[in-house]
Amino acid sequence: MFALFVVAKVSAQTEPANYTIAVGKFKTLYNNNQPDSIYNMFGPEMTSALTREYFKTTTTQLRAQLGNLSETTFTSYTAPVALYKATFQKGALAISMSLNKENKIIGLLLSPLQASAANGAAAPAAVQKAMDPSLVESPIVVKTLSGTIHGTLTMPKNAAGKIPVVLIIAGSGPTDRNGNSPKLGLETNTYHMLAEGLGQNGIASVRYDKRMIGESQTNNKEADLRFDDYVDDAVGLIQKLNDDQRFSKIIVLGHSEGSLVGMLACHDEPVKGYISIAGAGDRADKIVTEQMKSKPQYLQDEFKTFMDTLKRGHVTDNIDPALYFIARPSIQRYLMTWFRYEPARVIKTVKVPVMIVQGTTDLQVTVDNADKLRKGKSDATVVIIPGMNHVLKEAPADRDPNLATYNKPDLPLKAELVPAIVKFVNGIN
Image 1 (cartoon, rainbow, N blue to C red):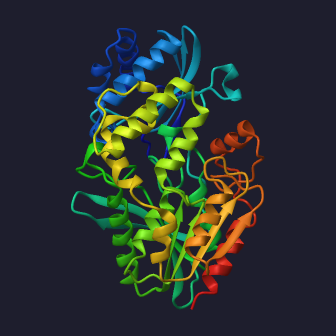
Image 2: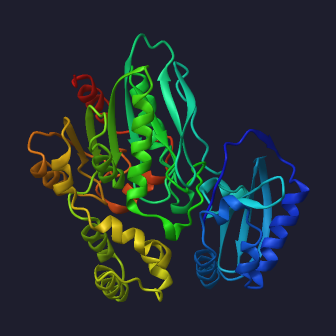
Image 3: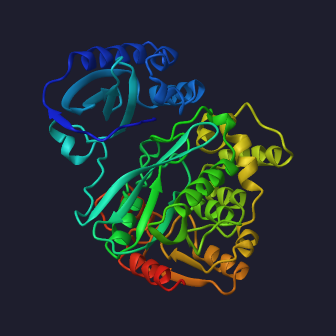
């Protein structure tokens, strides 16, 4: 389920009265199968990023899997997030809830209980790790026609003269500036760690919440989103950095889906270098279709029918809820605009030095994608990092322990990654 949370500031063990009322109302409405009424409890931060239809489908699936909500046990409060242990008929989860001043829900996350929950303590929400004290962070904002993009500029405190700056573009899905996504159950701090590693080597960086995620709220609904919107956001940040006299050169770094965004954003912009990390070499529709092979056959068949319809330029309103994560009606026009790009061809248009980085234990983007990108850019620097997975951490090839690293925000980046990036950045004139 969806979640939006701000950084916690104040801790307490007493449940605020307004949270008691809110969680009690949530329980009643959930058990009465009234997801629309729960949705009416949401603040604008939630409703702007989560459609009523998607929430209703997800809640219905949850009730089918776990049954009614029998009890909610308060465990802790760290403003503005209250944590509960939720006991259902068929299992238990942790609930994290956040309210605004109007007592509207601005954060709601149902997640698995961790081992520490054995005595009734719910798993805490992800909290951003502290940045190295030798670095200083400040907000950066770019206005768009539909809203604003918010990010973080990380700088060495004692920078002497102009220094390089790297624009970090996040991967696919509702990912924030740190590489986390409560909606996807993703807690990596990957981009936070990358910014820290670069800063420790005298290189500034900017990382930002994707459009409609975190602080980067816009007037658009999910159905309005197009792939080129992400490119426009990156271009806006490049231009802002180019106007900043503190920087000697701009390098664009795109991770996963952000790799293609970065390639397109480099076109005719004042960029000195481009880095693709875990970037697809095939069109996204081929990648997604390949990933669907791990799903039951009936879902693969329905997805194929959906894709055939999409390629003909038509949307499919009647989609199995099990495919909503990739094919819900509100994102289908976005998929059309994404699927038309061939990364191995787009990379040919990048006129600056290029580095392609790929891990050997990446379950989502395989090493052969790096080979396809290299064929499109024969003079690129290619770095293959043994044992690095899709979230840029050390991981085995076995699926379960590999995916377990997606929820270890304190696990460091693969040791070879930052030195390779630093070497490339410093080698660009």
